[in-house]
Image 1 (cartoon, rainbow, N blue to C red):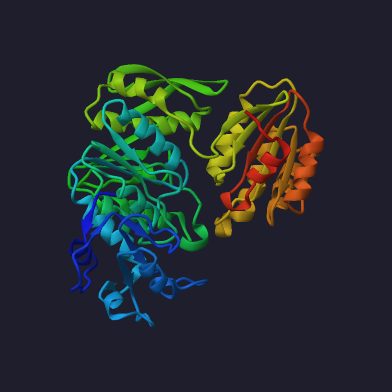
Image 2 (cartoon, rainbow, N blue to C red):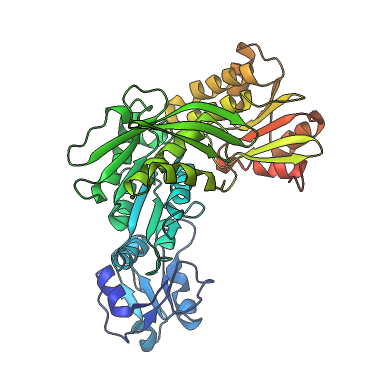
Amino acid sequence: MEQMSAYEIAKALNAEYHGEDVAIDHISTDSRDLSGNCLFVALEGERTDGHRYVAAALRGGARLAAVQKPVEGLAPEEESRLLRVENTFYAPLAIAAAYRRRYSLLTVGVTGSVGKTTTKDFIAAVLSARYKTLKSQGNHNNEFGLPVTVFELDPSYQAGVFEMGMDARGDISRLTAVVKPDIGVITNVGVSHLERLGTRENILAAKLEITEGMADGSPLILCGDNDLLSTVEIPRLRVLRYGIEAPELDARAEEIVTGEGETRFVIVWKDGRYPARIPAMGRHNAMNALAGFLVGIEAGMTPEEAAEALSGYAISGMRQRVRLWNGIKVVEDCYNAAPDSMNAALDTLSGMECEGRKICVFADMRELGSASDESHRAIGQHAARVADKLLVYGPQSHLYVEGANAAGLSDAREYPDRPALTQAVREAVRPGDIVWFKGSLLMNLEEVLRAVFPDAE
């Protein structure tokens, strides 16, 4: 983070400040992280209250502290270093918005029920072929993570790709107000967040909040194969669609062939056909790559350049990372799970050559609301058509087994916890097998993988 003055930050926070105009180059919500010239933001949470640590932060190196209520036990000099705001929860976003306005660069905002992180990485791979590009890392896609990415900006960056997640209405609205995307991308509207938002139409409305930060005439890139996104029309924006199956698309993937650790396909755009190769498996990844291609075109790249740049994509986190361990092929796909991504994983597994058995190790999908029971059963049914064995755990995992049994897979079993599942996987696998691990991030399925397959390469 480049330095911001105390008065610049106070203005961003709409806070009254009459102290020394110190320089700030680090924003922290953790009193144990006070590196550099730090502003400590005191958050009031359910488990702990950051206001309890303000005195320690100011005495431990923080130059300033943002607070929303009185803090006892401070000396007058320490009181003068407080920035009083209405709600500290939104302080990092407000400061990030002011910081973002310093820089002129091409910005891309990415959201969606599934696929947004992979799509962000494809977009960044394409743009990086021509521009110095910053992208969101890890799960930095919320009110606290997005500012972390924004604060990495400096004048050398020519482009930025910002992932935007959500839990409720208004979340993306706040994020897009900071980023002000030149290009918006929505990958999918699925059933994740049904528990909070009730209907897919409400989820669509929440995702479309990304357009609030976009100027008139900006390109909005949507997955045309998604039933809800295919209906979106926003006259003030230029809507572009990509996909595989839909009849009217601006970019289409054809001749898709998935091999070992890669997918090859042809991108159809306008009157041209452009071969592409990505180091990731599956039709769904070809779909995600199309969004990257269209962003490249909108950023001024030639179609040949954008298609070629897709090969620079690198898998991040625990997403379909293929590893080998004593003759067993292990697929680490534990970052998240929703019906669309589970079906995509099973379709990809179906096309993989296997000398032994195809084994699925699944954990629950979360936040599906009223769609949860049927979704788990349906995935179990799909697994029965692909896998030789299904091992599962989680409060709703018995529904995977019900669906698999109903579809004819007798070798499907639920386990009460991760240790029991770990032991079952250890006893089941043998050389030649493919073992695919997938579940929602909070299920911590990667712990099973690492226990059974230590040091898998």
